[in-house]
Image: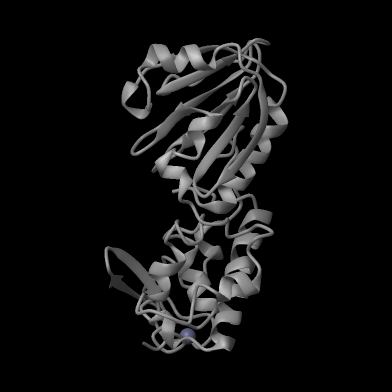
Length: 272
Ligand SMILES: [Zn+2]
């Protein structure tokens, strides 16, 4: 499932490739992923120029001329794939966006994928994106701001970091090594963290995500051109490595249940 590093790469590539192009047609195969009836969705989009592409959390925003916004969420296991003029497109798409120069892109949603249209006045009321917290790799993500999330309450540190309303872009993949690098057990209550714990967690978060972004994201995810990223399973320290030795102390990495998700920890380096 794509997280922040993959989505940053995708949004950058989409911005470079699509800015200035005008939507000529929209073909909807699966209506369920839309927030409007297909005819209205298409009518709002056709004739709009793409001005800017960026992501907030796991949503990709395409700002359009005529005060419109196309919002895409890959859900689980989806991809957005570009095709150039005259190039064949993938048949497995749920929605296809076609530009006036003959290029376009397909969305292959598998589960929980969305393609929404909002006008600028409606954007603040778009529920899935309106409440997203700052991006985990952004200018807003300072140590001072990050520290303000901690100190009070009984929430667990993993639940806090993966709560998209607090801080957006971290899911169940990168959180594993973030917590390992910070030497924190996923179920540690946030109120029990010292200033030093929080500072370590901040650097572990930004460091892990930045390194993955520099490697163009996960090897099992594709970018806008169908090219896989460079982060392989061997790059993880404890994530998805149950039964293997901890790279720090040699103890056996364990897979444990934390709420509704699985966590991978070194029981020695990350005591409960
Ligand atoms: Zn260890």
